Length: 372
Image 1: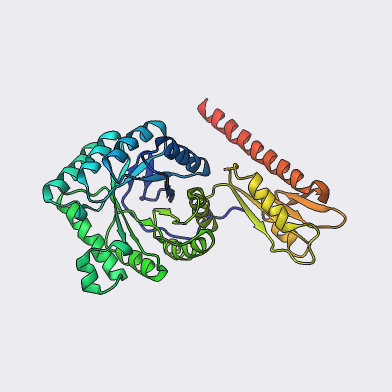
Image 2: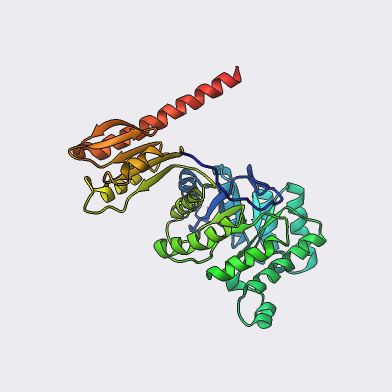
């Protein structure tokens, strides 16, 4: 049974990153960053396409040189997802990607240099309707803040962000979002909680340099989960030393677990024990791989025995309860048919795909009727 999230989200100003609304109550956008050489256009386009297939709303691309900026223009022509250009220090690169069609600029105005350079970048963004992202990172705080605080702290992150925000305020530029990232969970959470009450702009969440696939997923889930439970966050990136596609999957899983977004199948599965009447772990592994392409929201319970199985199956869209000699399959909370172990995974995949197709047909019929 689908339930609304009990989380009350922080009210924020809305900006547009391409055609994706960020803030102002819009769905929390999930994004990742390419790790290819940006100058390798084909490789970067291929990775962006893979991220789009995984469900990414926005993709960030590092643009460290003018050569990369020209490549960015070619990439922009070949992909449809909104692109954020990640730029540091060189205002000429920022001006060039603005001309080439960037959807958002990740650049800290305080790092650009002279006031005329800052003004030029801000005016270019204003003229083209390009929002900015102020991105503060504990690993690259200004030297003056390092001397003041001695080490990265939540207070230092917030002060750094406010310095950059003050520059944009002086130029009356309000279309920006802010991130304050550290690899330390408590520092990150404290910084976001502090700035959330000081500004109206949307916040981009992340635990930076969180680690590998397993450890980084755990750390990100805890840190981002704490903030999301507070209603803080309008877009997020899960930073993993792994395939960027995994960042998108984990991001959606975090949001799905908090009922903040629903994309793909929400599996409820038991860890299995000696009571199981089929191999739960292998069945789940197979189903997750086979059904990765399913984007529709669906709750599916896979439980190995009759202790918790019927209860979970009755509140799911579809469910399986282990039984002997055959397993009992539920649809819409009611027993539907029995499935044999020999063909269990094949049967489950078929039944789930049939349900997805049925729902699509219903949606299309509703749309068709409303168009008449």
